[in-house]
Image: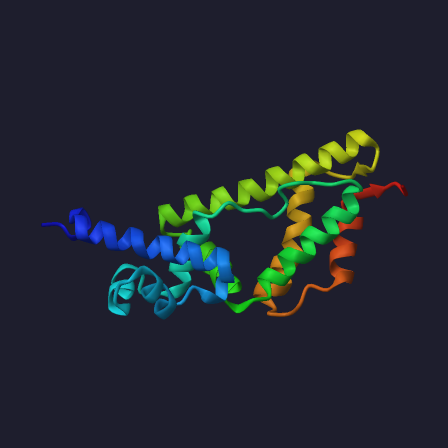
Amino acid sequence: MNTESDPRFQRSQQAILSAARELLLEKGPVAVTHAQVAERAGVGRATVYRHWPRADELLAEAMATVPMPLLANPTIPTRQWLTRELTTLARQLELDDVRAVATTLASTALWDQQMDARRAQFATILADRLAGALATAQVRGEVSLAMPGRDAAALLVGPIYYRCTIEHGPADSTLIETSIAAIGTWTAR
């Protein structure tokens, strides 16, 4: 019998993924380890390793099943909201586990269609949310964008991703504010 079609294999895989998702929501990315997931799922650590040999892949899978609150509910003034949200993104990317997931997702997506679909889904959510918030802010007269909204989204997230994942450094408030200022002309409100 094919292992993946075995109901026991499927049950343990689902229990592991559910446990990883619960730990992620309760304690954050650092809690999604083979040992903690095994304990929560009620399976042996070897079973977790059999399904997900690498903890970063398990974390990536768990993250893909959790609703992403980042950039979800824009508030007014948009610039202050944007600063808060991008700062939250930066603090998350400074965590080793989240940094590992972000880089694993990007690199694995080159040859794994499933991971590429997750990468595309994540990128689309971020770009759509940012572009939508910026378009609404522009209609309200808060900003005059110097570029299309999706390009602005890339310009906002790109430097943070680069600083945190490539340089392994903190994306400070100066970097975030400079990026926000670069996407257009903001009006004082």
